[in-house]
Length: 346
Image 1 (cartoon, rainbow, N blue to C red):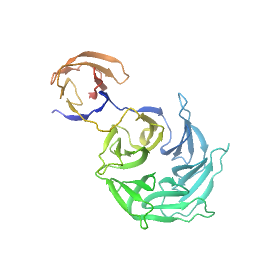
Image 2 (cartoon, helix red, strand yellow):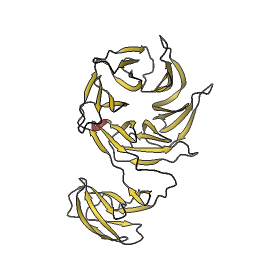
Image 3 (cartoon, one colour):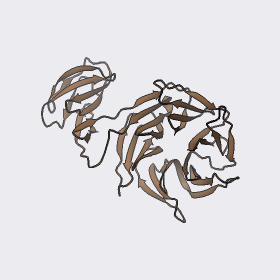
Image 4 (cartoon, rainbow, N blue to C red):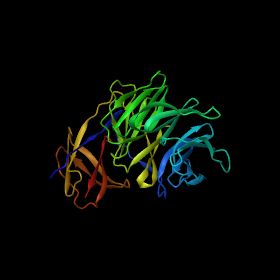
């Protein structure tokens, strides 16, 4: 049986790029429930009841404990040097001052009936997402009052702001929604539907990136488009869930893999691009593969996952390339024009 896979290659000034992840820290003995940046320090909430951090400028980042003793810390959001934390085990929002040597946990609001999953600031209002509602509190109040913004049956997860527009993922309906918080009665507007299990969100300019948890990929949309088109950025991930930008580098957690990874999105621009399609088949392959969609003979180099060139030659449309002597694993077929396709030898 032959398996046909269509690979979309993004054209940028006559060059083609294949997005791949780079692991930042691996072997985590906890599940990173959420991530948030303060400068070059990436903070993580843990299912072990801790807040931890790494310095991304280190060549080999070391995980440092910031505070322990929480029940089930989940959402994270910074307001200056104060890190706000949603503790879904206790049904409360707390905060710590990260400038303190030994930060003290201070409760901001308690007695929440719906466990808040994600947090996002709009001015002094801290928005909370959870199953069935999005709420907010004014952190300048001595005793903040919970105000419901939107209620319903949705399983709201990731939230992020673009001005007064609040973008949110809904895992129950597998879609991305938008809410105008300035409306007298805010309502949800469908932006993208037909996803698998969207979780974390993060904006980079007008591009909204999101993790599709069960689909194992990170995708993006242009929020200025009337009908946004989903573009996949990186696939074949292990349960990607939380996203956070540092400059043009997107950091993300792969929860069940116990690691934090990153991709640099600065080399990709989707403005007025054409999307040529090539077919590499079969994929996975055992004895040989072929490529269709080539307009002429092309020189190629075959690389293994370590980036080592292991085979070179010239390929034409539908010509068979013998790979039966290769070790099983992931490989990259790169042409002289930088067009690159990945495939699996099994």
